[in-house]
Length: 110
Length: 126
Image (cartoon, rainbow over all chains, first blue to last red):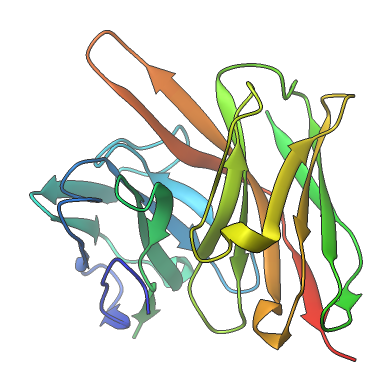
């Protein structure tokens, strides 16, 4: 069971906006930044959002992140078929002294 | 651009030690702007952080694995390694090495897993 909680699945039609939530506690999301990773089928995770809402170079602005209290969310706007994959949140946990991850949300484009 | 590549046996017998190496290209492990992690993912499941090592040599390990894990950097400063002892079937997973960027500003200090290797599958079976 993952320390951070995400919905197992999310879906939308091409062009729609999809939002994925990530819930934690005061020792992780509540006290540190949240980062998001995209994992396309059969590939390694790729950094999508860091420091809650920052996009690395090369990541389209269709992807956006936010954080409030002990929760965070990732939004994908203008959904495309090649966005299909798993999306996972991560945060450092000050109590565990460890990175903790969400269980991942599988995004399906209908 | 930092690149990472995992290597090591794909099959390990139960109770034995899993040993993996990560070769880092285009970067020196002794630089203070990154730390170096191992992360694993059982088939169909989420990511689990195993531990990391800073340029100083300081390590942090997942409390659930701490008694069995050692992460070290080799003297060439181009590879770091993972040793996991007394393995069982529950240790079967894809193992990733990763680089964490360390950011220190006047107002903030944080880090994040920035770059990942492609992963290597390790199966624990007799």
